[in-house]
Image 1 (cartoon, rainbow, N blue to C red):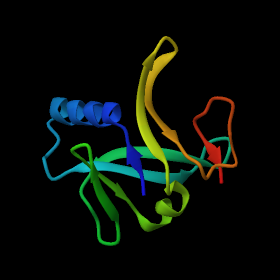
Image 2 (cartoon, rainbow, N blue to C red; image 1 turned 180 degrees about the vertical axis):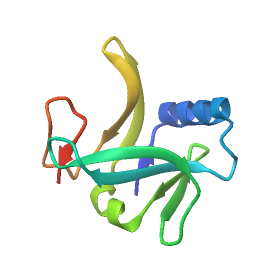
Image 3 (cartoon, rainbow, N blue to C red; image 1 turned 135 degrees about the horizontal axis):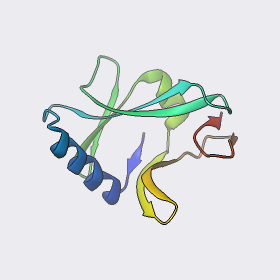
Image 4 (cartoon, rainbow, N blue to C red; image 1 turned 90 degrees about the vertical axis):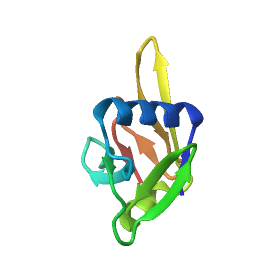
Length: 107
């Protein structure tokens, strides 16, 4: 399953609060076709669906559909805030490569 850092969890909670996201929602992490390397990540706030893998870490519910889970086992969700920008990052041990911009990956 996924691993969420404390920093990422705090940012998710702050965004959910500022957007008025209902308490029964959590962070859905999906893998979709696209990008220059073939796959890309999608992060959305959602409720759990039948068949989802659901885990709570650092006070945030994470949900992954069965297809995406095949690509995401062991992935770490983090949040970085640096000189080159800020945003969520996914450190995925299952990738075979990423594109130059880091927005998509090969599996």
